[in-house]
Amino acid sequence: MAKGKQQDVWEFFGDLLKERREAAGLSQGELGRRVFVSGAYIGLFEQGIRKPQLDVAVRIDEVLQTGGIFERTWRKLINKSPYASYFQAVAELEEVATRICEFAPFVVPGLLQTAEYARAVTVAANPFATEEYVEEKVTARLGRARILKDATRPEFWVMLHENTVVTPVGGPTVMAEQLNHIASLIRNRWVLVTVIPRSVGAHASMNGMLRLMEFEDQPPTAYTETSFSGTLLDDPAVVKRAQRAYDLLRVATLSPEASLALIESAAEDFRRCASTT
Image 1 (cartoon, rainbow, N blue to C red):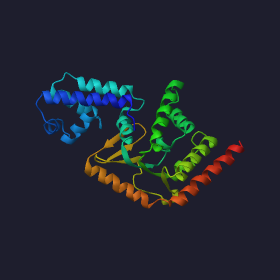
Image 2: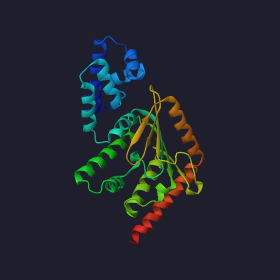
Image 3: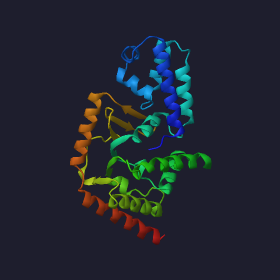
Image 4: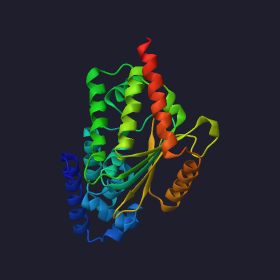
């Protein structure tokens, strides 16, 4: 997959980090210990594969005595991104993931959204936003979805709560198109979607969305998100707990066949509703 300008600049960040680390006479492991990450992560930063959190960039500046260059560079790169700062690293990691598993309790995952659904979600969260802002967010979200059609696309497993399927985001026409889009992706075998019926009641991970990502040569990560923030988790013990929560959710879902039937039935209901309004 071709790398974009953003990735190229993060590789510059990595090259600079390697240059300053070696000038200070530190190994990756030694620098990692001083900034409270593993030496392996320093190596991933230097390759531009992973991006440090802001607090790590600040500590690197302190240890290498660089006068704040890594913090300033980090802030400049994040500010250029169309994504919220807490989601930037997630958007970049999904491009190299071999497997993505996501639970969506309230809203259709961004990788599956249609343009009109994405617009409705964006406007609902930002009712006073300019049209330029809305278009930027929608374009960025649709751009991410290209990984599902790439030759090296990841396995993408999605669990939707039934509430996500039956809530008319953007109105019945928009919702019918959204559900048809999901059904098409399922039938093309680009994504595996199952639905947790409302009759299940209480279930694991009730507080928000959950995403797990696996990679060919990197440790797995977990990502959780609420309305105003998100947290990328890579501590092995925490990721293991998140994986267990996802497994518990999977037990509660309908079969793939029953889930597809529910999605297509809901799409038909929305189409009928749209035709009568």
